[in-house]
Amino acid sequence: MTGSTIKDTPEEWEVRGTGTPFRGKKTSVRTDDVVMPDGSVVTRDYQVHPGSVAVLALDGEGRVLVIRQYRHPVREKLWEIPAGLLDVPGENPLHAAQRELYEEAHVKAEDWRVLADVYTTPGGCDEAVRIFLARNLSEAEGERFAVEDEEADMELARVPVADLVRGVLAGDLHNNCLVVGVLSLIAAERGDGLDALRPAGAPWPARPFEA
Image (cartoon, rainbow, N blue to C red; front, side, top):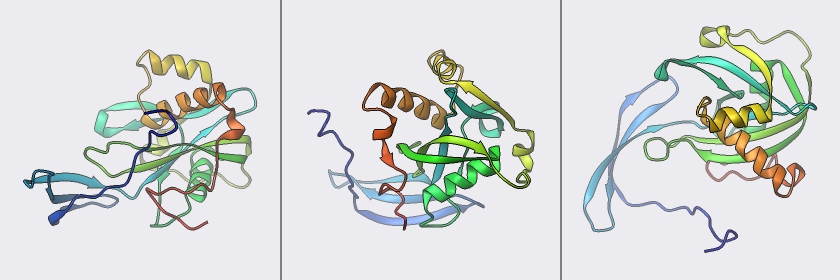
């Protein structure tokens, strides 16, 4: 198999029964009885997620805009790139990404590209994330967005890409979108270049949307 032919493909096995034992504010847990290739039926529990976007915002000095935020499930303050949920089914992910960059960093960008599309934990959650590259940054106009809860304690910084790469490879940085985004950026720069990345409105089969 060559690099040009390796590709994930859609497939859906038969489900004999399904239930939703838990519904939360933003996500839920689903239980499916799935038919295996040998005909046996097994139960699979997984988190149902609306999907997310993340933004690797790169400034003219080669620095990435990052935020530091408390994440209760892992009991750590993590350095991350701006990210957030898709608010409504079918929402244009670019619009969601622009919103998150404004709300979390009060920054806007003129140039947007798709950096990577990932499933965060496909063995136990259907969350899909589109990671954008944003360039030509400037301060957003108007008042800053009012933040609350964990976001009220956020720190903002601009960190050179090389420092982030070192942090990832040293095991000091753990946020999945930051890790995937930074390493994808380096791969793109060393490959066909950032201008060859997919356009911001590229199709996203995992979370279809209208332009």
